[in-house]
Image (cartoon, rainbow, N blue to C red; front, side):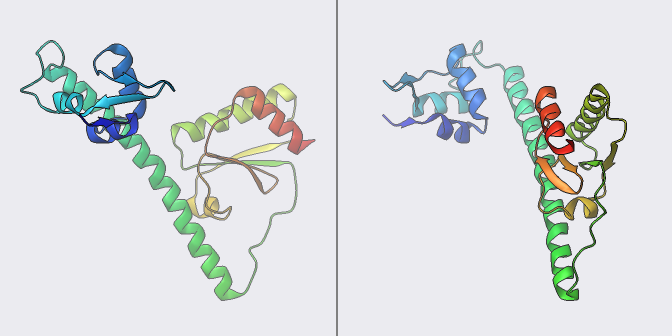
Length: 194
């Protein structure tokens, strides 16, 4: 009998690893637990889930299969959106670097001032980082700091291949790819704004 790792099972079923683990813990997918705590799934279990003829009606109805496929599609769409934005930023950065190298000039840098930019095309996480930054600065009593939301992909690409959302303080990229907890953001701002 052939056994698959959780990752291999996720790939075969086209589901995420956390979903496979949830199936194991919910009893919808049988596994063998190794002494180190890792799960191994018999290939027969994968075939059982993939073959509608072998699945009992109460285990996986058509509605449940559609629900799983819809969740999987939603996860994939979010991944595609995130990766598409990252690829666009990276391609624009590469084109700017090439243009700069061809011209032989350095890109102009803004004069240093208390200025924060939130980098992001306008997705939910980018807007969340912008709102959180404004709120934390308000709590800190820092009315002297301007906060801008930079949505222009060429302007974002000027900072390099950045995973959005990003946070720039006084022209220096200090955070990329996520929204930190409120306290972590406060420490980051205090450390860079003084």
